[in-house]
Length: 311
Image 1 (tube, rainbow, N blue to C red):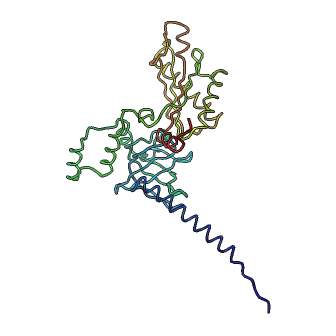
Image 2: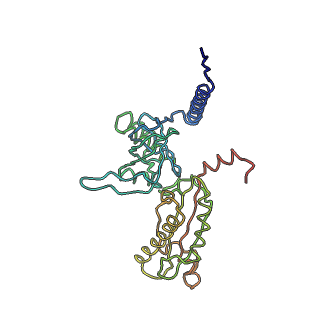
Image 3: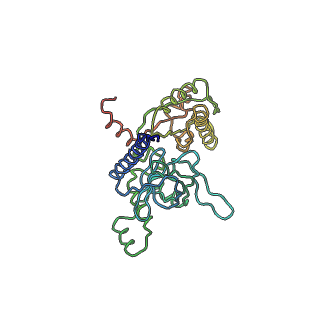
């Protein structure tokens, strides 16, 4: 009778590997919970839909707090649909990811990923809540707010939103005014008279800028278009916006920088000159688009703490 040799090595290896994976997941979740005890993990593959307030904002993620004051991290990608609520027989207005401000009440729908984050498929909010977040309304004092809460006159989400808005240090919807980003790189490209076409020199400058941006993490790009003092106000406003849009298109199409990295490109017409408009040389400098790469301050601080010897 033949003896059958059983190889216990493979089953033991598989069990050990599974145990190590589970242990790593537990440690990762524990570290995340230690940083924010109220942060909840979303099971991988689970569909979720909930309403809450944006309390923290980064380039690709934001943290949302619901009525029970539980926090969830939400990831944004190029497929995320960000709109206001639509009315009868009409669709809502689309917004860029950069307009998801702290203090904004949103409804999020998506699926959990392997890291316990919710990958957003749809994000919806009311236009009135967006206006309130933009203006960082602080008129309700904590005492008045508590009185209203006790009287049942204020929704818990609006109370959380008011708290988040008080943390915003400037009345501005752009990331530069949220005091969370530092300027890491910039470029200023000029244009010919009455033109929004990028010159070869301008493209070269933007190529250098894009190289720096693509090597960075946690960044946003701000684009501001300008004109000289000649021409009417309406024409200059349109021309400055066209110039800003031309820069965004070049960076997005040529260098594949995701659109979610850009704040809304703005045209400022002749309102912010950097040189004397009374001279031809000065006007040439004012026909420009300024591009800035704004890097997340929190990520920079964390990187410097982790690697203190690096410049």
